Length: 122
Image 1 (cartoon, one colour):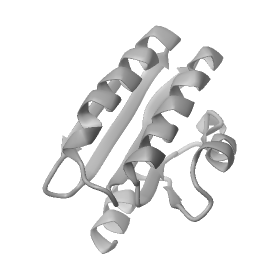
Image 2 (tube, rainbow, N blue to C red):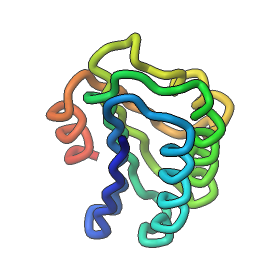
Image 3 (tube, rainbow, N blue to C red):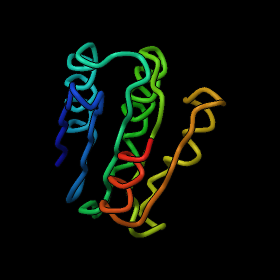
Image 4 (cartoon, one colour):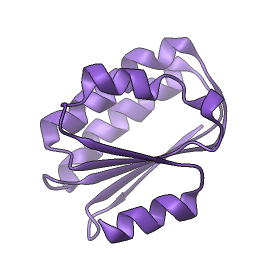
């Protein structure tokens, strides 16, 4: 399961993953993300919440890569992640090294409250 929310006034995209995510589902997520990304302006922020994630199929990697590269192309300014269990990182940290630009600030928190506080302070 995934949920994408776009908050234009806050220039924020929020991606929430839950349950067990399969490649077909993440393909739809990447397509929706690409369609909605023009609603945001350069410097936008991305909040990725893995709180409810149980598992993500390894076949999802190409779609995560696509989302990261779309963000780069659109001029992402900040990535904030909620990863309450480090075992559920699903490879985001490693993929970030290859698919985000080097100067992009990436913050990781254990709770949504911490992540929201960081976004409000940025």
